[in-house]
Length: 189
Length: 189
Image (cartoon, rainbow over all chains, first blue to last red; front, side, top):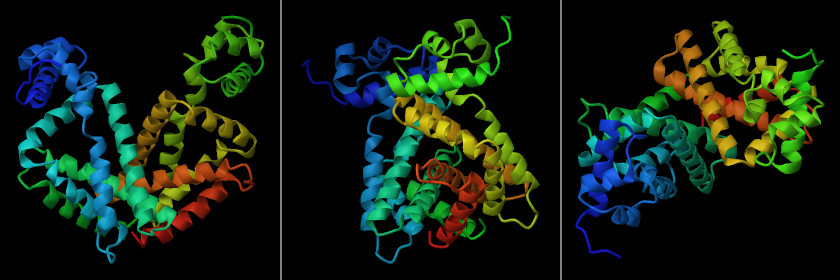
C-alpha cells in the first residue's frame, strides 16, 4: 500500500468525469485519470477495478437503500406510496452538492452504447429489487411487478427532472411530485 | 451468390439453436452451424451477420407490429387496452409451431450475460415504441410511459407463460388473460 492520500477516491472520480467529458469516455486512460488527480495508477486501482467502475461504484447500494425503506414503510401505504418512501430515501445519495456530478455522469453514459447497456442492466436490477421488497410486504406477484415498473419509471423520471439545469428542488421533493403525478396517471391506464 | 438452397434461413436458424442448446452459445462457431444445416459458411453470411443475429433477426419487426395495432385500436380503448390489442397482434409471429423454438431461444439467452443484455436493450426499445404509439393516440407523456411499462410487463409475462411446457393456449389468448390481470392489479398500486 502506498502512502495515504486525502480524498483520493473523490479526486479520482472528479478527474475521471472531467476527462470523460472533455475527451470522451473511450479516449480516456486510467493513467490520464490518475495524472489529472495528482495520484498514481497504483492508487487508482486501490479504489476502482477499471475506469468504468468510476461511474458505477456505489450503485449497488441504491437498491438496498430503496428496499429497506419500502419494507419499513407504513403498513397502510399502497405499493406505489411505499416505493415513493423508498425513492425519497435516496436523497442522502442524490444530495444537492452531487447534482452537477450526476448531470455530467448522465451525459457521459448517454453518449456511449456500452455504458448505456450497463445502465439498463442496473435499472433492471433496481426493478427486481423493488418487486422483491414489495412481495415482502405481502403484495401479490403481478401487482408487485407492475408497481415496481411504475416505481422504476418514477425513479428515472425523478432523476431526469432533478438533474435538469434549471432545477432547484431537492431529490425527495422531486420524487414526491413525480409519485403524485404517477398516481393520477394510474387511473387512466 | 451461390446456388439457391430451399429453406436455408430456417435450416440455419434451427441448426444454430440445436448447437447453442447442446454445446453452449459461446462454444458454437458459424462453421459448425453451417455444417449442421448442410450449408456453407458463405450461405450463412448471406442470411445473418453473425451467430448472435440468428437469435435476434426479425425482432425489430415486433415493435412495428405492436405500434401499428396500438395506433389502429378503437378510439374508446384505454391505453392498456390498446396495448393489449397491439400485443395480440404478435400471434402471427408467436404461432403455436414456433413455441418450441421460442422456448429454446429463451433458454439460450437466459444462460448468457451478453445475450441477456442484448435482450434487455430490445425490451427497452419495445417500451419506447409502445410509449410513442400511445402518444400518437393523444395519451399524455407520463401516462403513456407508465402504460408502456405496464405493456412491456404484459409482454414479458405473456411470453413467459406462453412458453411454459404445460401451456396450450395460443399467444393472443394468453395476452388477453394477462392484460385482464394487469387491469385488476392497476387499481391496487
